[in-house]
Image (cartoon, rainbow, N blue to C red; front, side, top):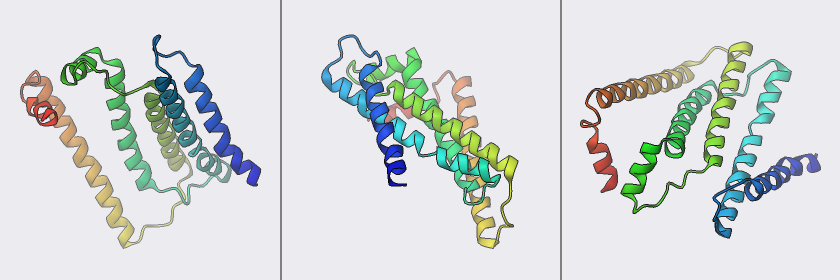
Length: 187
C-alpha cells in the first residue's frame, strides 16, 4: 500500500519533470525556462493524477456517494473560466499583443501546461458530472443541503447571465463599453 501510494506521487513528478525538460520549448530558452517547464508539467501531472481514483471508484461502485454534486458544478464553472482565460492568453494573437503592449513587451506567463491542466480538469469534471447523471444515488437532501444547492445553482446562473450580458454589450459596442475593464486592470 505504501509503495502504491508513493508511485501515485513519485511517478507523476518524474514524468512531469521529463516532459518539462524534453518537450520542445523556445529555441533560445534559458535553464530557468526549463526548470519552470519541469515544475509546470510536474504540477500538471500530480494534480491530474489526483482525480483518477475518485472517477475509477465511481465507475467500479456504480455510485457517486461521496462525490459532491455542488463541487462538480462549481468546478465546471471554474475550469471553464480558467481554460478560456489561458486559451485566450496562449492562442489568441490579439490578446497576446494587448498583453505585450500593456506589459513593456513581455509575453504572458501562460504556458502549454497551463492549458493542459485546465483542459484536463474540465474534461475530468465533465466525466464526474456524467457519472453523477449515470449513477445518481444520493439520498434526499435535508433542509440545509437544499439551501446550499439553491445558493450554488442560483450563483452559477447569476454569473452566467452577467457573463452573457457583458459579452453581448462588448460585442455590440465594439469593446467601447468595456474599456473601463482594461483601464481598471492597468491602473
